[in-house]
Length: 112
Image (tube, rainbow, N blue to C red; front, side, top):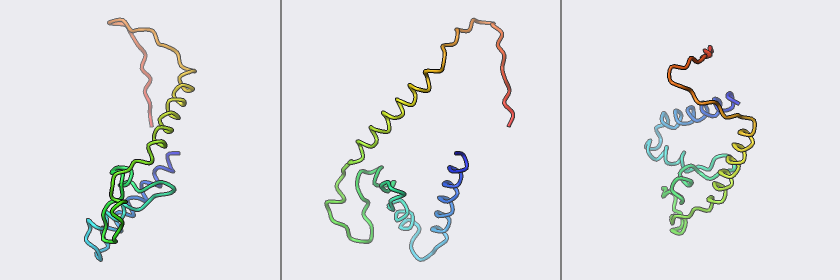
């Protein structure tokens, strides 16, 4: 799983470096274009953040610039899924006893 995230981060960094090194457009417009592009079956990051499409050089209808949050149901579903996952994860945990002042404890060192 860690490798998947690392690959996604590296791809994002490579994309941004290529955008910033490409001098055909001003950098701000290039970054705006990158953030306004939908990513893998999801709306664009800027669209999720702002609730609308961002104004670009390409003309778009005025209606598309009005805030709208149609993804609220997806966000709520994700929150419910996280709650359910936490519930199932916590079923196998136990409550630890409270520590008293000056009580000795064992600490395990993690070496990586």
